[in-house]
Length: 112
Image 1 (cartoon, rainbow, N blue to C red):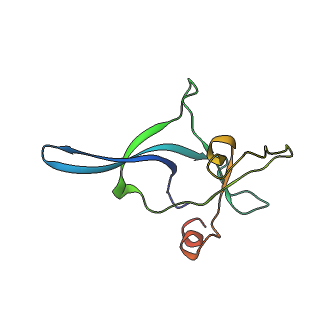
Image 2 (image 1 turned 180 degrees about the horizontal axis):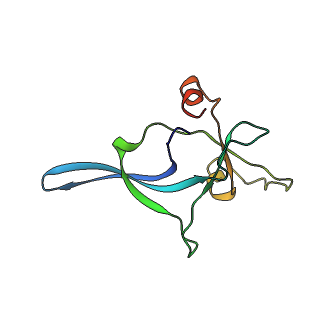
Protein backbone atom coordinates (compact mmCIF):
# COMPACT_ATOMS: atom_id res chain seq x y z
CA UNK A 1 0.00 0.00 0.00
CA UNK A 2 2.92 2.25 -0.83
CA UNK A 3 3.95 2.85 2.80
CA UNK A 4 0.58 4.19 3.94
CA UNK A 5 -1.05 3.14 7.19
CA UNK A 6 -4.76 2.72 7.86
CA UNK A 7 -6.51 4.02 10.96
CA UNK A 8 -10.07 4.60 12.10
CA UNK A 9 -10.72 8.17 13.19
CA UNK A 10 -12.55 8.12 16.51
CA UNK A 11 -12.76 11.88 16.99
CA UNK A 12 -11.37 15.15 15.73
CA UNK A 13 -10.27 17.82 18.19
CA UNK A 14 -8.05 20.84 18.44
CA UNK A 15 -6.10 22.61 21.11
CA UNK A 16 -3.91 25.68 21.42
CA UNK A 17 -0.38 25.55 22.80
CA UNK A 18 1.64 28.73 23.24
CA UNK A 19 -0.81 30.58 21.01
CA UNK A 20 -0.57 28.10 18.13
CA UNK A 21 -3.65 25.99 17.23
CA UNK A 22 -3.22 22.27 16.52
CA UNK A 23 -5.91 20.25 14.72
CA UNK A 24 -5.69 16.56 15.60
CA UNK A 25 -7.50 13.23 15.43
CA UNK A 26 -7.64 10.32 17.84
CA UNK A 27 -7.18 7.17 15.72
CA UNK A 28 -7.33 3.41 16.18
CA UNK A 29 -4.61 1.76 14.08
CA UNK A 30 -5.19 -1.09 11.64
CA UNK A 31 -2.50 -3.44 10.33
CA UNK A 32 -2.20 -5.68 7.31
CA UNK A 33 -2.97 -9.35 7.97
CA UNK A 34 -0.49 -10.53 5.31
CA UNK A 35 2.47 -9.04 3.48
CA UNK A 36 0.60 -9.15 0.18
CA UNK A 37 -2.98 -8.67 -1.01
CA UNK A 38 -5.52 -11.49 -0.71
CA UNK A 39 -4.94 -13.96 -3.54
CA UNK A 40 -8.62 -14.30 -4.50
CA UNK A 41 -9.78 -10.70 -4.11
CA UNK A 42 -6.60 -8.80 -4.92
CA UNK A 43 -7.31 -6.52 -1.95
CA UNK A 44 -5.29 -5.91 1.21
CA UNK A 45 -6.80 -7.50 4.33
CA UNK A 46 -6.63 -5.36 7.47
CA UNK A 47 -7.45 -5.88 11.14
CA UNK A 48 -7.75 -3.43 14.03
CA UNK A 49 -4.69 -3.38 16.32
CA UNK A 50 -4.92 -4.07 20.05
CA UNK A 51 -2.32 -3.84 22.81
CA UNK A 52 -1.29 -6.84 24.93
CA UNK A 53 -3.96 -5.93 27.48
CA UNK A 54 -6.70 -6.08 24.81
CA UNK A 55 -7.21 -2.33 24.59
CA UNK A 56 -7.27 -0.62 21.17
CA UNK A 57 -3.93 0.68 19.87
CA UNK A 58 -4.71 4.41 19.80
CA UNK A 59 -2.71 7.45 18.78
CA UNK A 60 -3.14 11.16 18.32
CA UNK A 61 -2.14 12.39 14.87
CA UNK A 62 -2.15 15.82 13.26
CA UNK A 63 -4.87 16.12 10.62
CA UNK A 64 -2.25 17.11 8.05
CA UNK A 65 -0.92 13.52 8.20
CA UNK A 66 -4.29 12.12 7.04
CA UNK A 67 -4.05 11.53 3.30
CA UNK A 68 -7.55 10.32 2.40
CA UNK A 69 -10.45 8.13 3.49
CA UNK A 70 -10.23 4.38 3.08
CA UNK A 71 -13.21 2.23 2.09
CA UNK A 72 -13.24 -0.89 4.29
CA UNK A 73 -15.40 -3.91 3.45
CA UNK A 74 -15.95 -6.52 6.18
CA UNK A 75 -14.56 -10.00 5.61
CA UNK A 76 -17.69 -12.08 6.10
CA UNK A 77 -17.80 -15.58 7.55
CA UNK A 78 -20.41 -18.30 7.22
CA UNK A 79 -22.18 -17.13 10.39
CA UNK A 80 -25.47 -15.26 10.21
CA UNK A 81 -25.51 -11.54 10.94
CA UNK A 82 -27.93 -10.13 13.47
CA UNK A 83 -30.79 -8.13 11.97
CA UNK A 84 -30.00 -5.12 14.15
CA UNK A 85 -26.51 -4.72 12.62
CA UNK A 86 -26.12 -1.34 10.93
CA UNK A 87 -23.35 0.26 8.92
CA UNK A 88 -22.39 2.17 12.05
CA UNK A 89 -21.55 -1.08 13.89
CA UNK A 90 -19.42 -2.86 11.31
CA UNK A 91 -16.02 -1.53 12.41
CA UNK A 92 -16.77 -2.78 15.93
CA UNK A 93 -18.30 -6.15 14.97
CA UNK A 94 -16.00 -7.58 12.29
CA UNK A 95 -12.40 -8.67 12.89
CA UNK A 96 -10.99 -8.24 9.38
CA UNK A 97 -11.64 -5.91 6.45
CA UNK A 98 -10.73 -5.60 2.80
CA UNK A 99 -9.26 -2.22 1.81
CA UNK A 100 -11.29 -1.50 -1.32
CA UNK A 101 -8.97 -0.15 -4.00
CA UNK A 102 -11.80 -0.17 -6.55
CA UNK A 103 -13.82 2.56 -4.83
CA UNK A 104 -12.31 5.21 -7.13
CA UNK A 105 -9.37 5.86 -9.46
CA UNK A 106 -7.18 7.54 -6.83
CA UNK A 107 -7.60 4.68 -4.35
CA UNK A 108 -6.77 2.20 -7.11
CA UNK A 109 -3.51 4.02 -7.88
CA UNK A 110 -2.52 4.24 -4.19
CA UNK A 111 -3.31 0.66 -3.11
CA UNK A 112 -1.74 -1.26 -6.01
